[in-house]
Image (tube, rainbow, N blue to C red; front, side, top):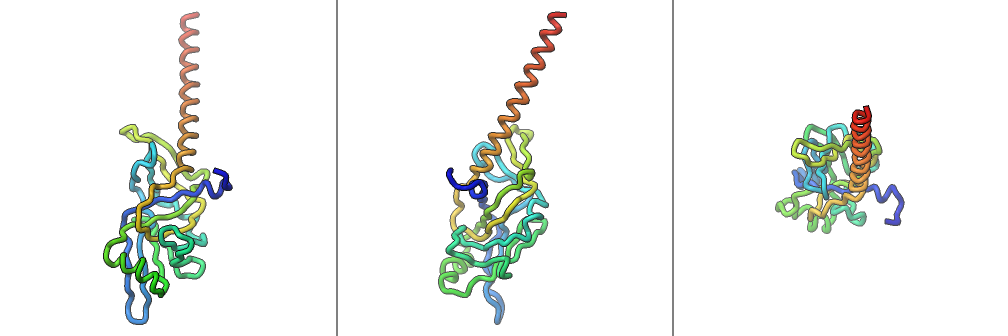
Length: 203
């Protein structure tokens, strides 16, 4: 990849969870309400590992200038934290968002109506993990787990029509680094064991 590291470190995740359109009361516009991410829930297989987001992971990015996008499309802006049309909160479930939907026919036809019909039932968010914000380990079943404890940046969040295959290239690089480090540690342990055995034989 030839783009800058900041771009190549971006990742996207899809969550099938509550996302809905609230038509609003009299004099109030429609809102889009959903969860961009959920805590303590194992993801699908992301290419050799599964992922879990821990409570507190979003604490350092809640003040970021985040866009509310439909399908991650920068040409389809639904709201923005800077303007107050997108609001982010954290609760026991995860990262909750509330968007004041633009009052346009396009948004009504392509986003609000499908949400109200239940045709759209997922959300996604675009992020970058902090350098010290992840931990790798094997669970009791021997499955490799990436535990995210801190995000460095939150770029956008919003409803998505299709659960795109997760962009986990940055995570895959991190996984390979972890596996290489683990392999070096195992090799060092093996050398030490052999040296101890040779010393015992020599004694």
